[in-house]
Length: 438
Ligand code: PMP
Image (cartoon, rainbow, N blue to C red; front, side):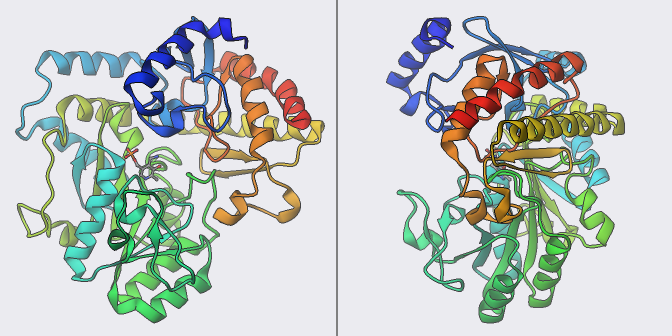
């Protein structure tokens, strides 16, 4: 798209860059990885985004997961408008919090939840609780799993498997990651080794229920169950982060297609995105015995001025109540259609690629299938970012908004109808050619 076609976005981006670092309030919204001007979105309806210059795009980001029903769903909008009319925050307990907590407890194995305002807060609080509950300090995580910008989790692997991590960004003191062990994803031997060496110091192991932040990398069959069992054996808590997958990969999250079938239960879980219906709401939950250690019932401190905010919990509750089996069937069907068509178009254009999914989430890796499936961060890092950038821009020019990074899941919604799907299908051949030429 020519510069003049996006002149309003461009002008806004220039002004934003003066008053905001990089012009955006969360790094992945910038187009740093793909080049060009980030589109400033003016409005959204159903499966479509409209930018400040009036261009429409089929939305394959869905606010990075939350918009399960599509944008401006009439019933969610009505519920939110009614809630706003009753006041926006009281700093007291409210009924919608109880109803949303009951809805989450009904769909997942957690017995109790505590609401917070972001996924970052959820994982940060879950780790504090795990440490407080076990009286231990060490946390194990996997490379390529993102759990928000929690200091101790913004960690890169140390020089050997069982060595403690180093900060993944300036601003995180070495002391904050000195109790974090970072392991390769899907690597049972690495897990066994660190538990053999440090088992009695490990408070918890945290993992994305299915990795979605290095592209979609599902756990190998039985891997999460193995993690649950290893944690149990060593008296550590098993924390599954379902901020992205919760109420998205299936109605019961990724656990619904994994632990629920295999018969294991995490000690703690984290949720966000879909459960907030597009508002800032997240949660962590688990066994009542563990959750009971939280203040005011127990000694582990945790709090939030806007936690369980009535507008956010109303939006989340309305969204979850509307998220029926038919919704998940529809989303699963759209995901299947899109990933099959994307793979076919790339094959026809001769672009090496691997498509992977976890429930209704999927992503397209621009990597050579000769290396086999993408099973961990090292595999994901083989992505051809140049080819992806060309593909991304060709799709954008054809009216399809993909994530502006090759390492992200593609999200669809209940509002992705035939017209939206057809727009994507029509865009794929030329975009695949563009990737081939890059
Ligand atoms: N955990 C996972 C698995 C996530 O995908 C994210 C956000 N993408 C977070 C935690 C952090 O959530 P938030 O951005 O709301 O802080």
